[in-house]
Image (cartoon, rainbow, N blue to C red):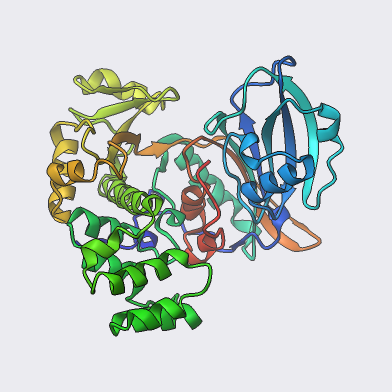
Length: 422
């Protein structure tokens, strides 16, 4: 299977010219405000505190705060991960701490905005979504009407719910490793992890990959930079197992194995969206429809009855996150998904064979709707810009919306691999 790369996936707004431009020229051009699922009650043993951070990944901020308060980082709860190269706000939680100590925190790049008590620890997923304010630079502000037109279409018909490029690693190839695992082809999986240099590989990494391809596993192990502990370990496992790929693959970190398989799930989902790009807002008989925002799924047995709900964005057709327990649709969407698996030469039995390393399967809506959106244009001390504001539910990528607006791989790539799902 040789499907198009992520930057060639079709656009819903293909008839609207792209804005181009640059994103994240400076951190304040990309602001993300977490929208909480619920407000703190004001009572309880847990302290909720909302922070603003600049140019810091969430986990770096968590570790800095933990050190300052003398607690373990795992004791601090958070609802989601936020972008590093941005100005972001989010809520954290910590039990049995004096609120005054939290308020008094004075850390570089972190500011405590407010503090309140609550009865439980904040956990991953406890958020309604995120509010984005993004300035696109090096573009023509006079094109604001075209951007408004594109945003209007996306709000009405839905943004294609593609997984963003960060889901597929720096080289965009993690899904290929997942495919090789499913095919029980561990030589191909290791070749993709450790060899096959590409245009993004340079310096020591390029040298290590070249040495691997030459079969010099010891030299490759020595060449991998210090932070690539997994790659060094697998190279040595190959030496120990006399080049037997299946045995050596056991040295690959289990979390990475799960990531590779998840990336292949995501890749197939993207292909499902691409094949239905002009029918994301149209129900087909046999579809498994998603109820917004709860996420319950039901089978469409009467298209005429359910289509008005789809037009109102109450429900949406879904696509596959394949796994051994995923519920398949019937009708045209069932045929589409069967064709995806046939093209990949993957069977249900192969998903069952990796059930310990991959999620059991699920349905995911083929589209999402930006809420409370607006577009304006102007100029500041850094020059002209077009500014977009919108809110996304949890599980949606801002990258995919910006991709529709800018239609420039280099523009969206400037978001970097740190941008995570809303």
